[in-house]
Length: 221
Ligand SMILES: C[S@@+](CC[C@H](N)C(=O)[O-])C[C@H]1O[C@@H](n2cnc3c(N)ncnc32)[C@H](O)[C@@H]1O
Image (cartoon, rainbow, N blue to C red; front, side):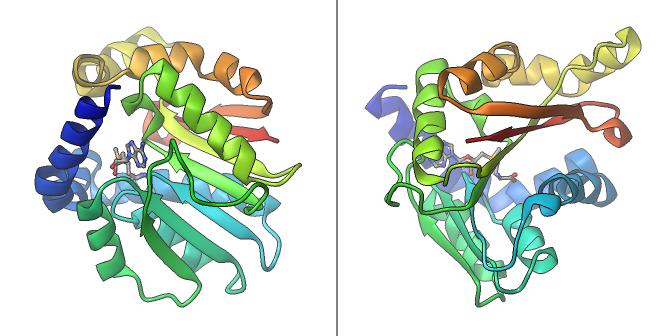
């Protein structure tokens, strides 16, 4: 993404998407569906979390997942959500009632944290919006800021293998996402990119109780 494209992208989130993001997801996924997806991230991550761990939610948007993780994980954990868009972060800050949770405006390509600052990191529904160069850059930044043996969880789109589900997926999500984002290309390349940036892949799991339209990839530094 050029500097100009990145500024335009941020503007769209700041001015328009941030205002409608939460309600849009509730319409697109239904409140129950969104809860299934967010909770599945918690369920995959929580076995690895110890008291007092520091966790990064990168590209946290309006903070819905960040807040859910803060509510359900140990109270002693320190959670930080960062996003490029000031509009998204303003929404997240408004919803925050937790002393151990902070939000900040930050570019995932240039994280203002020292090496090994976090125990673990998650990124939800953001890598598909990045091109290959940016993804590799962001993955390297995540690798830099988490500790050795730290978990990195990716929540992303997933095109199911079963033909009927695949048709439904493309009707519901895939078709539009492939016009507006890098979804297919990201899905094809993400495991290779994780290896290239020195992550060890632990598990790739389609979320079955949401028709396998989404997946969780767990990897380790
Ligand atoms: C589809 S939203 C996902 C938000 C949130 N993670 C969620 O699960 O609802 C993608 C988010 O990625 C953020 N984003 C995209 N590129 C970014 C970058 N380079 N640095 C930080 N945030 C970025 C956008 O501002 C947006 O809030």
